[in-house]
Image (tube, rainbow over all chains, first blue to last red; front, side):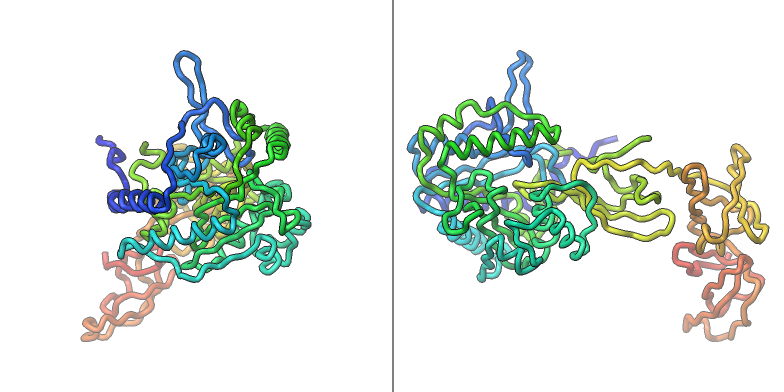
Length: 324
Length: 187
């Protein structure tokens, strides 16, 4: 019997993807942002407990990690004086598969010198509107963008202080919202649950929503906020309830970076997660000095889903995992 | 006891939850880019039939439910229990009316049904999709009305009441779809 899975599954989206890639490159060319390429395979990987790296081995025993994002090598380029840069990069994340996830996907990541996260949010919105307007067949988000701080969002929708609430208060708010959740969650996991399962589904479906100034416990590589104590200068973009992009006013302090990395490794160890090898070069690049900049990564496959109005990521990827 | 992790949840998987056997209808993976992953699962309780939505932290494990579908022949009812037999082994099982739910009205002696066993005890019975049953009572049809497609209630030998076309008469045998409870044809 012939296995029908040989056939690529996204014929209807194929030309749209090519067009989108071309428009993205044109957008950055017009701004004078340089396209760069960095390796898919690296000797080390981020320690972020929420990301699982794919590991690759060669027959001679050499091994490495497939990148979860091009962030580390792109920041090494920034530290080397490369200036404003962008990349369309294939990235890999273990254990992530579903209607909105494929373990291999396309990230658009870019960095702007001298920007803070608010200025980069403006550029991100301009990018999405510009792209959506280039093809008459594509869906366009409402021109009116919803901008909310993380704290205001949690306070207004759930009556919670996102910086001070306990796991028990989060759990009670989840129950009130009809969420029946099994498993022991710490405070940050509860905040994630409320964001992904309660709040994002309430975002207006045809609008872009920006959420900014996340609790410092969720800073990742964002710098501590000066205007909002206890927060980090991090933001996310949603189109309807679909998370499209994550960005930072980038952390440049190497001491804070090292402290967060140690905390992440300790957390992985305590949760029984494997700790990947530490990237051997990134900390040194931070020590040598990352310029003041903001950066953001946008899921290109998801953007294409929204532009085409489809609900399953497999509709825009010819060879999703399982057929790849 | 076998367990399943959330990453193994697929439609049709039978798990034990809150003391009841439940079947996974749908499992959606939800994860913020920089945060905790979850499985949002729709489950049907195999004992009560209720469908509910539950969310699991990714990586949670649940016990497998020892649930098995077995073809059995319906033998007879003694008024309190309905008796079934596995044709190959002659093993017999008895079910109460409460456990049968609405299935009792479609059971005709000798018909083969699917009996769902949980820990070796019958949990529910699924009658054949189509059954042929004799009409034991219905009013005479009115000639000339057949073109209008009118219907009348007919009581079948098992006690079920179905709507049949006016031209169908008492004493005839009809084919019924047990999933919808609708008349299909005369036999």
